[in-house]
Image 1 (tube, rainbow, N blue to C red):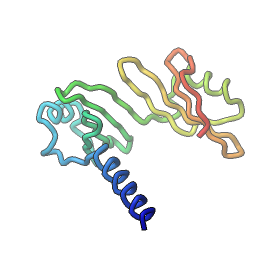
Image 2: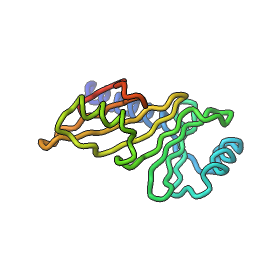
Image 3: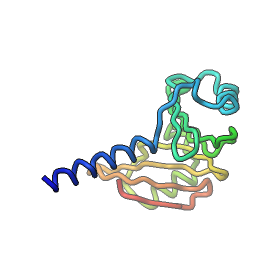
Image 4: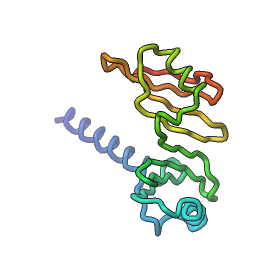
Length: 148
């Protein structure tokens, strides 16, 4: 009985921690300065979802069937910007770095990320189905390389 109570207590603590870490919001709950900044820049946004997470506001949305994600601080300043991109549009130095690191793979997904500096998050896959996620700067320097 004691163990059962400990398990239930741990589960409740875990659930309450998870639910606090990312709170879904309606657009009415987003501060006007943030909402105005977003709506001015992305008038054609669809499927807009707002979340409050770790003290910043995160919005996920689509424009012309492409996924985007932006994080704003509480004053409306953009902290990061992430844009899904066509793999054919990946800059050549970035593509070359990924293919050099993992020969025989193909690019399957690409995102452009801006957090003060621009980086590209690239997913590559080989014929056996093995996948890697790489973060590469515009000059082709590999910042991280993780097997998926």
